[in-house]
Image (tube, rainbow, N blue to C red; front, side, top):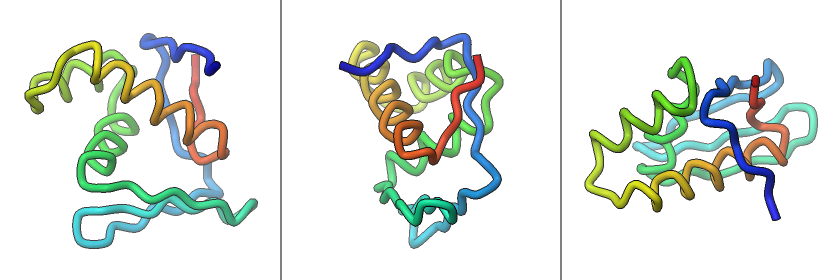
Length: 95
């Protein structure tokens, strides 16, 4: 089971990670491990908002206002995305 992501934290992209947009979708690549992660349009939007926000909570609030989604589903999706990306070394959670 994954550790819960503190929504007071901020996420950042490590220097060794490249992000490339491909027609609305994205590929996130670690130059150190050569691991990559593909994001669909919604995942790409979540990534963009998360890395640009002061906190995970502010990203959550923005995405909740933007998408017609159940709040608990959005929270779970954000936690899952951050968890998967941070496990791969593609995102850092700064508490």
